[in-house]
Length: 68
Image (cartoon, rainbow, N blue to C red):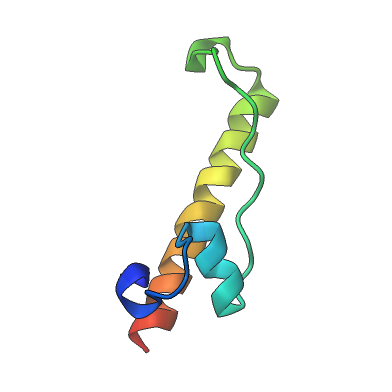
């Protein structure tokens, strides 16, 4: 959707769209490379959950802003 609305911009990642639309930006991705869910600490699991929730919120807000 963003690519169609903003074709002159080279990057249309969620982070770029959030900045362009003046939304709260995404969180930094927690580093869990090479780990399985069962191997993560409770803190790492919580960080991943918060990251995903923020991503969903930013995506929904970007959609609402673009269809308005």
